[in-house]
Figure 1 (cartoon, helix red, strand yellow):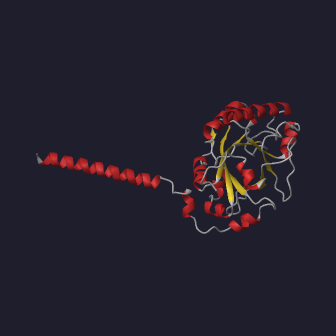
Figure 2: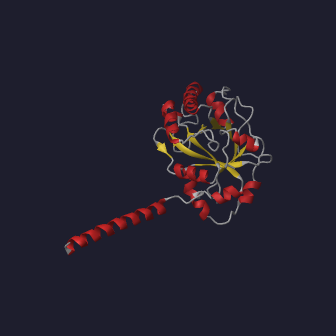
Figure 3: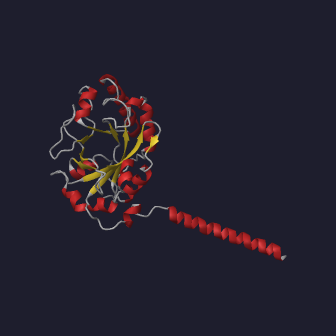
Length: 279
C-alpha cells in the first residue's frame, strides 16, 4: 500500500475519532445537570427560613409561580425553595397564539427534577379574540401529563399589564368577556378532561364579568396580598391556591408566592394520584 493511501486512512480515522470525541464533549456540556440543573450548583439555602416563616398562618404548604420576568431580575434558587418547603411550581407557558415563554422548558424541567409538583399556566388575552385558538396553542405547549406530579393548568384572568393598551376589562362588555372566558375554559377542559384552575382577583372579576357566579365549581387561585383570608370573587366559597405576595425585583429569591388551601391533601387534589417517589 502506498504511503499516501496509508496517510489518508490515518487522517480519516483521526477525523472520525475527533468527531466522536467532539460529540461526547458537546453532549456532556449541553446536558442539564442532574436533579434540577443549577440547583446542585447553588450554595447554602440562605433565606429558606424567612420564606417559610412569611407564609400566612395556617397555610404551611407553599409554592411559587414563574414567568420570564423572574429571569430578568434573579434566578430560581431551587435549593432554597426546597429547603423552604416550596412544594409546587407553576410556570407561564403561553400568551395569545404566538408567544411561548423562552424559559418555560428549562423551568418546568428543573422543577420536575427537584421533585416538585409542577404545572403550566396561560396568560389570557381576551383583547386578541380567538379564545379557542389561544387555548389550543396553550395545550400544545403545556406538557400536561396525567401523572402524580403534574398540576391542573391555570388560566390567568386579570388586569392587562402596561404594554397591553386596553381598558381594565380588555375593552369588552361583561357579556362579551363572559362568552370569551366560557369558550376558552371549555377548550382547556376538553383537552385535559377536567376543569382548569382560574387565577383572578375579586376586584377584577366582579366588575369585568358582571359578578358572574357560574365558575364557583372551578378551582380558584386567588391573588390577594393581605395577611388575612382573601376576599373571593362572585360564585366562589373557597379557594385552592392563594397568591399572598407578588415578586419584588428588588429582593433576592423573591418570586410570586402561593400557599395551598388544605395542605398536602389540597395540593394532591390539583394533580392525579401521586406516583411512588414523589415527595
